Image: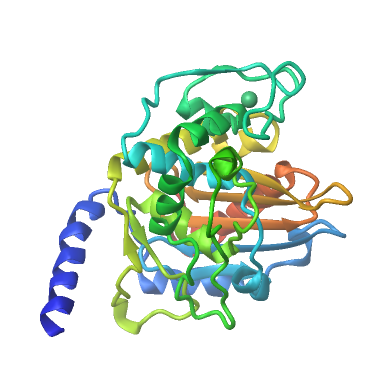
Length: 342
Ligand SMILES: [Zn+2]
């Protein structure tokens, strides 16, 4: 037993050396104390009146939560991930080398094309020919529905498990739930799974935070923690992702999503934030949606990961807008603490 534990530690340390090449210029424990203290309780003007939202910012060196709101939602709310799950589908395709990421699919738009496995693209005029990278940046449903059918459900679910979904993150927030993955999949549901809209798929904000943190830091799945060991010691990661090339690809696509979008997304690019939006229907009787944003920054050398969840958000731009305000305030606090984005 002891030998097995030692072997695992050696394995983690061995991989850690590779992952550390892409490791952020980590803020030390004192910097993070200063940051958490300066940020304090989220201000009332951060979230527009009438909007209900949760967010969390995690340091990528040790998983410390430096700023967060609505802890109960972060740990206990398990809902559909919507398009954020396209990161998982892309990871499945890339890590297993199951498709050529440069191969394009033509998206003709909502009205002009038959659905693929029950999925249509949300953009009326269509995205035209898209490769994997462009499909992620533009969140093209048509491409991912095709990809889901190419891959089948099992590799996507295996990637979801590797990325930490379907189990607790091991955070120290009270009452954390494990969310859920579909237990049985029919071949015809693979397209809906690929775009994150299938029955039984439920994720918590903390799970998405840990997942996007691992994309940002090169493969270490961290447990988001309110308290970390004193003196700079690190908790072991809860998992190590085995496909660094796939993660590099995802980082590039998420950076593009922020850089060439419009409105608030373009603003995110200027903040150095790389991310992915998601919107998901949560009530079938009337059209209501939740909105997600997950990301990390600075894009070229990630130091922090972020998750935003907007309850009954009208669209992904609301979550992206809140993400921008959160990052701005964290950067102001970092500058005041003597740090700030390079
Ligand atoms: Zn499309």
